[in-house]
Image 1 (cartoon, helix red, strand yellow):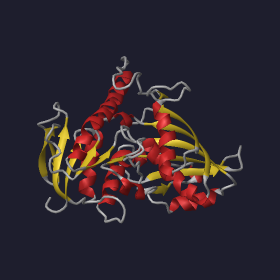
Image 2 (cartoon, helix red, strand yellow):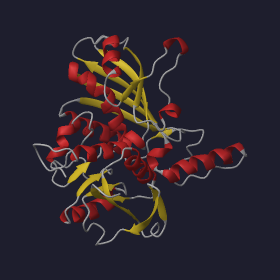
Image 3 (cartoon, helix red, strand yellow):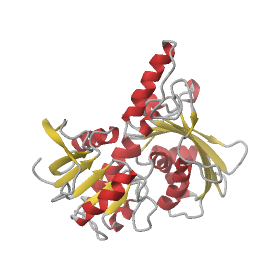
Image 4 (cartoon, helix red, strand yellow):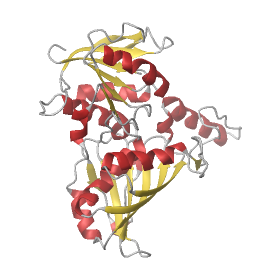
Length: 342
């Protein structure tokens, strides 16, 4: 590390933090210095990066002195408390929590969809929810050709969405059940192994959970379509890593499935996976560890001539979180005519 930016990873010891470090190295991000920040509980450990062992430091009042860029993945309350301090110290922050996503002055960015929004930041840029990012990559290329009128989506969300502890809990539950023992649930309210349940985030008065409303409100903001009709049902499923989604997309007129497939085949961040003869379509086990969102089973909705249906799987930790954040940071390293870059 010699030329480039002084970067701090906040939440470095978590699942997304580990992926952020891997991506910074894999993509040869321009680094001058790397600071790893975490809670006092995790401080004092070391993490490998670029052949070096880097000490994890406890987050504190002087953590952001001299830092150019903060990649934050430590939860909403931490972001709300500390990111304004980082901005005051002169850093640009890319936040993976929900703390700032719907703030009018904070851009919400998916680089393949609205990269220009990143340049309007005032120190903080928000990373969308994982399910929103995956859906946006599949719907946006079609929306550009024929504006979407309505989206109905059901998600199949892996344990990785709740972090490394939840992933380990599902493994332990599976071992317990197979041994004839009672599974213990701590990361989730109910056992997830060999089970599924609607997303456990708080419900509103209309019966929609917080995760579902994130998909509604964030997609509208990213697309610049305040009145886009969206209904989401989010479900936790016993998959370790990578989320899947079944999406019904309604347009104002018919949209040929073959045209949609051709558009998605050349869309950035998307890989079309279809073999109708083998009934082979995107699966989370194959999406895990991949940068691209796998999209397939693109078909005509037989109940609505103006609607298409598709299925996708995408790595929640990678494109759904860490990769999207690093891509936003990469946007800021390129000189722009609007807003602040490095």
